[in-house]
Length: 159
Image (cartoon, rainbow, N blue to C red):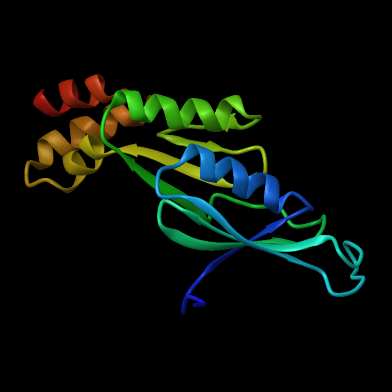
């Protein structure tokens, strides 16, 4: 059944490669149907992979091999909640270690230019908790980080 809402992500011929990477990296992720172009199009030929259905952490997505010229930005990102430092490290290292790039405050980009926020739950809990002083301390600690350090966030939260 086709979902009512699907995230469509533009790739330059690498939608299947990206979907396979996401499926092996993120829990509750999989590659679904692969659709081939019924005819030639500006970025490819008949029979080329045109779209790939996949899920990332349970979210339905469609990879579209639309061709070159479209650049991704941080205006769209996947935010993945992690339970501990080991999961944070594993996901961050998988993205960055597969041709991605580190950024600040828990953000990184994969080799296809898609932005990811690898966000430990302890950080979100600090920001949304009732103790606003602890939220501020956790926020200030996060602002100095690339990959989030769970122990440092917990220490900042405690004061």
